[in-house]
Length: 294
Image (cartoon, rainbow, N blue to C red):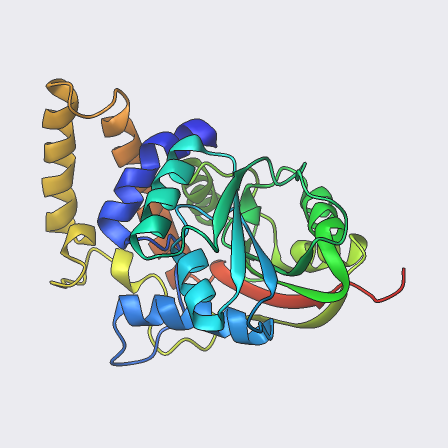
């Protein structure tokens, strides 16, 4: 995962922006607007209040962290195991005046370097799908969260429409896993059971992709041309592919950049197919609470 993100981060930021995630999207709403609203929705579900100490598990370069911190006037710590992303995130924090109130900690979210009962709220956005053991991951989140407080998450999952005996379904799942540096993608049922096994009480859960007026995968769909997301279109991808090839050849892009670029293209194809067939969702959302007494 670490090697993958060393090379993939720049592609993500170039093609998507600072927040590396999908979003529920209304008609007439831009991708950027939907991403911000997706983050605000999470903050509201956690009932974040000014002064609260919040943890972002698997924070990327901190796009959601900065948006949520400004939206809710909270202090957000981003947990990340990738040096490159942390360096980039700290620079972006300083550029918007959040260098003193928000920070990054380099660590594996399976072994967090925090004391028990440290945070007032914890969230994860399309990140804990990288955990090799979901129960172990959720138990660590449970440990660092204060009693009576909540954890909210957007998970990448396969849905009930997925058929493991269907060769097409299996190919799509494999493409998503390979192109995104993932272990075995879990089902929505497995994720919900895992968070219960970790000790949490489920407040509510829903696959938010089910009632999104615009499909979440729309920006990746090569059949749709958009000036606002030109880099993600077929033409944009061809230009990017050739540019990366030249940059790697002359030594301006790291070795392996072209390979990662092709991984990401294949991942995009899998994501679009998975979305259209409704066998995959990047926004299975749930809010859970750590009981006041164990």
